[in-house]
Image 1: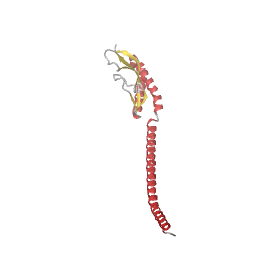
Image 2 (image 1 turned 180 degrees about the horizontal axis):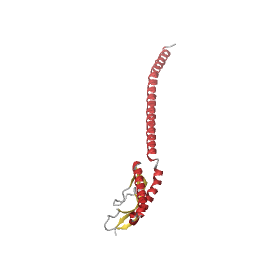
Image 3 (image 1 turned 90 degrees about the vertical axis):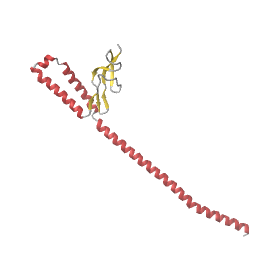
Image 4 (image 1 turned 120 degrees about the vertical axis):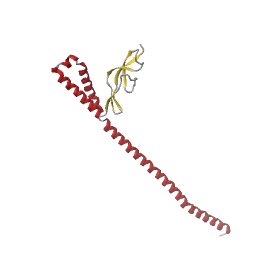
Length: 179
């Protein structure tokens, strides 16, 4: 071998050693990078799992809270009929001793239904004298009124009800307008 060939071989050996020594450092850097990516994926997966768990808990709570909404809505018509029956009874009939027990029974039934509504978070929506709230009231007619502020409710045709913070049924109302 001549000198030039020896120098070239020595250079190749040195480059090879440098490459071999650089390879573990490069492999280590690649592993650290890969480990960090895996760590991020694990953190994202844990966060997603926690979000799903929270969402399911919220849905479970809402289902328990509002499960009776359909039944409650159906019971509102019973309440309306009881109220209409009591409103239709004239004073003369209320004074009649033979019918007094019947009327007292209807009133007691209405009070008991109110009590059941209250225990289950069903509340009547205030309407008369309030400004029209499209989220709680449904305007049926406009009534000319000099005393009431335009846009305020002057008549309630049908009571509205809420189940906790959700609307069961809007109040059907008459709204004041300028005469």
